[in-house]
Length: 605
Image (cartoon, rainbow, N blue to C red; front, side, top):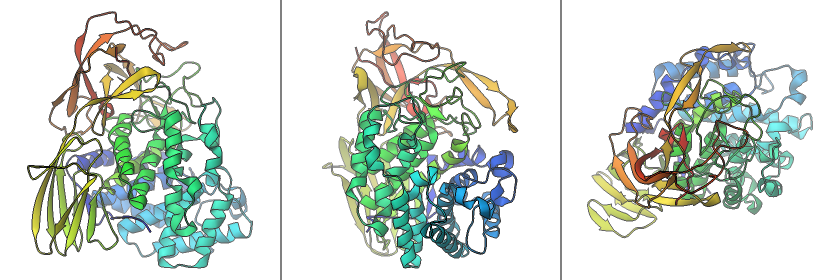
């Protein structure tokens, strides 16, 4: 049984900086793809001639909760238009994907698995009573075709088989019919066996494989937790063990695994795909809810507050396909890219650099994160503040409001109005050094629980004492953390706007491509252990490149770092020398998510 349950967008609403971040997303690329990107605008899912596979489901997976969280009437109507078009084209036998009947055996059913997840999200947001029946017929048809061996899993569907379990859990709770669990067993039997691939994760290769594909692996982490109610426990798929292996051999300071596009090792100049950020976050949200283990919430914060904003422009009109820890330039590679298995445009900020999957898929990250702020125990009388971001919760049991600028600040103010007897549990991050409640120091603990009787209102103020610290990284390098924020040395840059059309896809402002060309020094080492924190107002853009809400001052000295062999836009993996070539100066680090060009893994001399 799951430890916690998710609330829906009808009960949970973002506030403060989180609301502003979602509004920026709605006003940017996410909120406009159906107007200007042919793979969504003209998709075969709604009867058009363009993509009829993953693009529209990917986009809807984020656009739908974004629209309902913001209570945006125009966006919810546009989402409904797509759902209407999809449901109108569902065949009498239940098959829902575009294409001809004779092409179904060669159709990679990853798109079907993804669409099944989208329909559950839409139902949670809209309560549209057409969805349960459409989903039932869709998945029953999938079962019939798989059980009769008319089709089999292959390709992406084979490696993402567990994604269908979001819908299977939904159906099992409502119908409880035997075929639902039988379908789950078939998917697992025909699906990829990830534990058997684990030895391949230890040594990165310049070879593209599904077994080491970074997005598959980000999704995979939630598989056992997601499937457990239907298939039972599977110790071989223990997320803790698998995550530990991936991190040990491919980890980054911001909680990602390198994958450009397949696992790429521990080098700070290898990339991580944006789709993997969104999918790894979604896995951690499920793991947080199903297991109740607070470590997953802390890992979720690390991704959301660093890796996610660090690879998307401030206005959210452009994004990278790949981000690096040490990223001194975002320009085209004229010949061989430094990435192991991706193309030379992967580091640009643009409409669809390298490939369009991330264009559609990054949309789910912030909305689903917002839906993970509060969780409940199933009865609604026990509420968990899982990720302390500014939010309002409104249910028939209680109204709870959290006012905070966390993670930029460390004070949380809860206002709770109980309609029934409830308890509020507040997770306390492991990095907290000192803890106080309503101005009084308390012993640090994993969580705080407050019992609030029916008919009462209570305000609770919680203050965290945290300190900046150096974190060890491979190759005798260091990164700096302050709570859930990782800090980087920002590199000044100039932008070069690229407007053009290719393969029928137009790039024009504001959804054109950009190169970021460095315009300042970057080759430094930490030369002091003293880290001084300076706060500034939290901007209209929370992770603003121009106005970071917090900075850390530290002494640094220039060193002859050097460039990676064969490149003039990529720093060497490790410094050529750690011998300083200039005096110490006080320099400012900013949050990783605020620094588009940055040095994050740096020696301490």
